[in-house]
Length: 114
Image 1 (cartoon, one colour):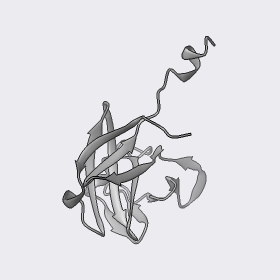
Image 2: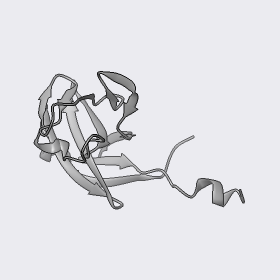
Image 3: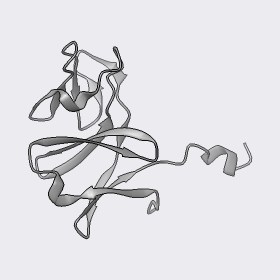
Image 4: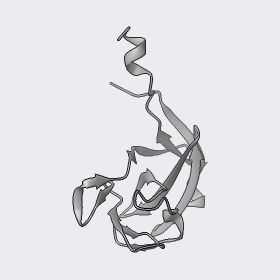
């Protein structure tokens, strides 16, 4: 099933390999990371104290929070010390020179009458 919930958020040329960039999509603060030829999207707020991850350090696929050093894998949002703690992750794609982020409809169940 193809999702039509992808929202354009920036030009592909604005995010180089090995870089991070914070964007706002549908009211959500998302950290985009281009690594290994792919683009990953995770919540741009550390669950520990709410610090923005955009100012953190990126090493391979791990972003370290600039406030207290918490480390997250951008491929799945998992905190490296405890898989029970995760960032929200977002599917991303590149199409026609733009980066798109999938924003799922939070009202899905209401559309089903549940």
